[in-house]
Image 1 (cartoon, rainbow, N blue to C red):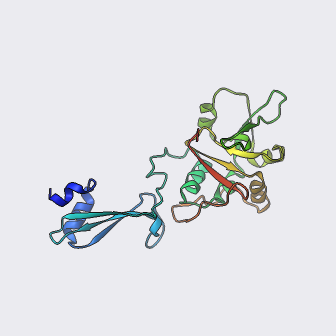
Image 2: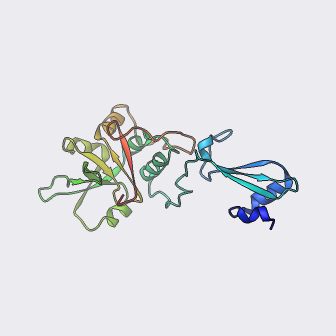
Image 3: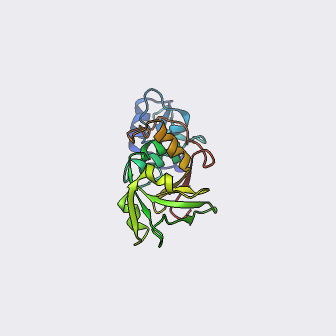
Length: 220
């Protein structure tokens, strides 16, 4: 190992081999979830390595504009298409609009109050919410409570005024969703088969006042 390499982060074997093939070059590293056509955008590039005249790696530059994907962050594989849309929207690898679009047509579980209505709660930050679970995994992780299975689009008609939907509050990444955007998705004719993103989108969608807001971590 050269003295220069002593100050570098661990160099991957494929980068070391590529450097030997192309001396005096910059070698970009793309996030493992990027799958868009053509050259990746700057936010999908982790950073770059530079090979010296002899092909050895001599420098590493981090990209300050890099957005780590769910895979790069080590998040678990999504439990369903809604969870996938939430993860992608939270990291900027998919559009926020895909969350309500994918939710439409999906059967969800809602917790029931003693009077048989929807159980309401307060999310971190003080927002009144109706917890909603798209996967049995997240439902059972939340604890043993009475629940009801309903179509997602039917829930919004029962949400009290001023309340948001709290998608999968026990998941690694949850999301607050304005019921109006689900109503909009229903009105637009979305049937739950919308593309939730494939690593080629650059926005996280609208904020809670207009649509969606991610909550990183189940107890964030």
